[in-house]
Length: 199
Length: 223
Image (cartoon, rainbow over all chains, first blue to last red):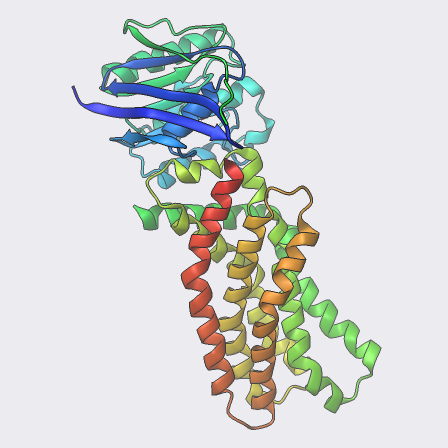
């Protein structure tokens, strides 16, 4: 088993107030981690910290491979077409995955390659984000609420992409609220408690 | 890998600039409105115009650079592309350099290309033209670098453009002084090497320190 991601006693504080304290986790290839907890407990913050966007206040996070982070924000330029956005992702992350049209077809956006990304609906934007994971494959996926705004077919698509990614030796950490992933792999659960105040 | 990410970012910035056609023409509109309007205000005498030509062309370059700063990082912050700079393998400092380079390409290069024509319209002696272009080539990257740092620092403030101008102006005064000094010296038939040398020193200083400081400032804003 290759280790993909480790966190040791990772604590994040915003303005001196701890968002979460002393998180320990380890993620191996083929494993999926689900972060659970009430609103405001720091699920997004934890995923952003695992991705390297935020630095832990105490403790440390070690990434053994290149992560991909999919958050609430689309991370696309609305004035560029879907295909141009994906082509940028591929070059920017040094990807060698599916070509743009096949990635779009895979996430159910076939034929929308030339549409400006700003004209997509919320659910279609999420799908475009997933296509970004396919054009520039990275071993570690960090997905913040991947089921948000997706219809039933879209949610099944996420499950399918997760299963494929895990069976190819990738690892996933995700947060989820209403819907939990329906996949063959056992999920490692991480419960974050509601925020507590430290001086 | 680093070069690939940087070139991808520059290519996307240029593509977006072309798509927003109007904005990328602003630097030239500035340059030529200054060049055409000021003679109407101060009178068309060749001696007077030749004396103020370097300063006017430089002020146009400066305004073109400054006005584009507000949108240097903010759209990327709003749509989430900025936070991805810390997820990839390319260090954020290198991406800052790439973004500032595309800012320079969009705001300064059109001014540099048309500066000789503008200078001719203001009766600047022909022997000063190479020095004018050289001073713009060395000096405008400093404007982009210093402006980029100020834009990153004011990213967290709403409508930070006033604060941004206040931060930038004192820092670019030396650039303006040495650059226009170089062109005036050349127009008077003297050597401009001392001025250009100091300008070059400022550029080296800015290029060494600004990317580090800018990426640190950006990081504070996304946290």
